[in-house]
Length: 229
Image (cartoon, helix red, strand yellow):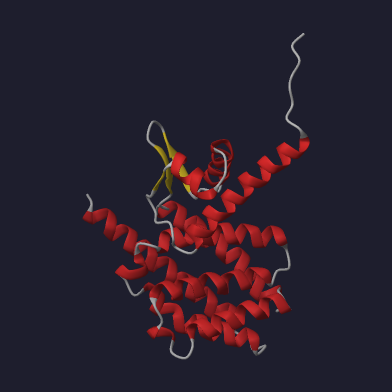
């Protein structure tokens, strides 16, 4: 019978760690708008840049394809995803369920407080004068803090993945529209209210905030689709 040669356990552990590390780095680049929707990811160059094997990078790609952050196109390669209308609607459904629940039942822990203070620092003193990309970073940080209020790692992980996909939907609008400036003041108000334990009424305001944000993103997607038709 054939003898199956297994890699030493330590080698397997390093391989899994390298793949996970590469996936997290790519996830972070998408989250911070360093990778734009539609970008092709060259396997050879990227493996060298991240200092991982091509096998580890392929595993990282597979993980992010499953998270719908990347897409694999036959005979063309791997690309950063561009969320469509249906996916944006799904993203906002997920956000409503998790974030509205967090505001109602969650807790401002020391970790949450630190993130909220970061949001305040990024958007002060006048939110609308902040660079749009920094407004986007503050937005990501605020919603991550709201997710952390659940004190439920699974929900935090789900919302983080959702918000990374949201950043992909936002990216074409970061400089093309006033998306972030429309919500920067409210982001600052939400962070300050949570820090000052003034959560009463936030749920209703936040629900309307999500409705307006979703419609803005969908309108922009429809306009882009019409301009390319």
